[in-house]
Amino acid sequence: MDEATLGALGLTLRVASLATLFALIPGVPLAYVLARFEFLGKGVLSTVVSLPLVLPPTAVGYLLLRMLGARGFLGRETLGIDLGILLTYKAAVLAATVMATPLVVRTARVAFEGIDPRLEQMARTLGHGPFRTFLRFTLPMASRGLLAAALLGFTRAVGEFGATVTIAGNIPGQTQTLASAIFSAQQVGDQREAAFLLGVALAVGFVAVLASERLVRSAPRSSLARGSRRRRARP
Amino acid sequence: MSSPDRPEVRLALPLEDFSLEVDLRVSSRVAGVFGPSGAGKTSLLEAIAGLRREARGRITFGDEVWLDSETGVFQAPEKRRIGYVPQDGLLFPHLDVRQNLLVGVRRAASAASSSFEALESVAELLELGHLLTRHPMSLSGGERQRVALGRALCSSPRLLLLDEPMGSLDLPLRRRLLPMLRRVSQELEVPMLLISHDPVEIQALCQEVFALNRGRIVAEGAPTDVLGNPEVFPLAPAEGFENVLQGVLTASGGGTSRLRLGPGGGAELVVPRVDARLGTEVLVSLPAHEVLISTGFPTGLSARNILPAQILAVEPLGELRLVRAALDDGGPTLSVEVTPDACESLGFVPELPVFLVIKTTGCRVYWEGPRNT
Image (cartoon, rainbow over all chains, first blue to last red; front, side):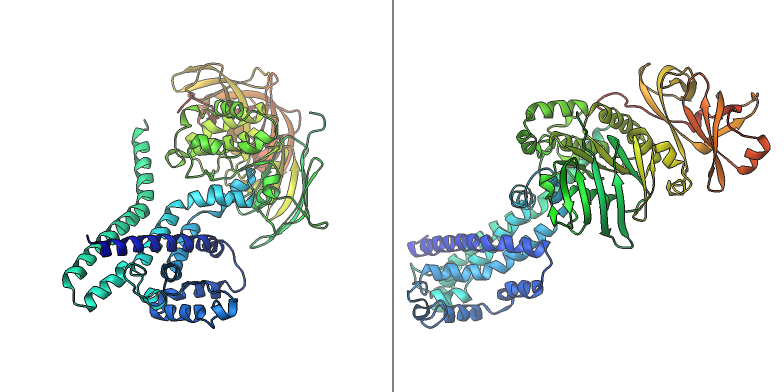
């Protein structure tokens, strides 16, 4: 593997990891709120969160570009300082975070909805306050679904291209991820390089999907197995 | 205990079809709320536990105010120190039995009692020792209920709330769990409020009962009085009034066993065979319509129990009559359902000596059975 490919792979994994983390931090509490509470504007909030899923990634990238541009509301002239995001790996992280968040929120929401709220009430009657109940009971009970959410977000971030090239560019060694490296290789007609990068992308994707399948399936299977063993053991 | 703490509940809570409006002052340590399913029993318990924010009224326990909607007091559920045992157990699926038992121990520790000791003694009391490393998924229904009760006890609650403790269990399990629950409730000092639609459970466990129908208390008092009340009687599931008797196993042979009926009487009862050591304490439930009354000693009957007794009272029970008769030799009192016609033509009046005829197979026996099964 040459240095440029290695660099692109390393950057991709780093960007995807950070993006997953930044998507989880607001995404998990948001998913919990959407799963548990009814409030005014819930439908709108849920829709806005999902928007990046249906918009063309380049449109999301363009929106971010406008926000971060000199006159945007996160721009140099508005804030008085330059955040120095555009055309750096930070921009790639930002783009991947925005694109991964809807998947993280939707998957985590399903995970929380699968937990009987009465179990949380049970923890409350046993002396645990609401915050502690969330940390000590809700999160562990949803852990499998949350892991699946993280993994989905991660794979989405690995594959992110449209929004990334729009705000981070495609600078080899600086902002060139696996996805943009494949694009570049194909553009200049380097078949061997493109095929090799494709292989790397396939490997990363294969491992991630396999892991998430196992996570999603292992819970019911193991409990069934335990149940039947128990039944047979009884006299 | 100086002046024991009891819950006092005055509550208004809108439910789907009607609203729960009760005023309930508990005066015994073990009290029950009896009613058919859908009467609002579970909602009542949840309100007492602090799980129904929309409940209005006033709930106090001793000198603590848990709810007072007039002054805006609402004590959060984690502050009430309640041991809530829901009908389905609600064990935490991500924890094993030991960890489940320890969930409420933090609070118990802050209430100054050694948590480890508590776990050990609760595990022994409920026979959970062999289950500690198992996961909730692998437990049977009865085991799950015992762990749920154990988890509540380990949190050193000031009040136990039991929601249909045996409601989801089949008969063989109930036979073993009922005497265990009875023993546990007698060994503990903690006040208990349990709800049930099962007259046997109520009589075997409670000193006082409130009958709830469509959100209203329709009768309260001693279990046998309340369950024999004409307004409460139709609420029992199909079978009508059930006698619940205590007994001690004195002999077993063939297909039957012989019991001496408590508390200190000489009355004996032949029941279906009980596979337990002699001397084991058992409970017997006997539907009031399974008993016959004879004014003279009957002969040539297949029924194995012909017990001399004296009529205490004859009470109306809907379109029927409920005759209460005390067995001779200090035996317990039984209730017998008869038609008004039979009542009149045989002249049933108080103090009339009679014979109660009971089929062996009419008796259902509950005993704790061997450990670890």
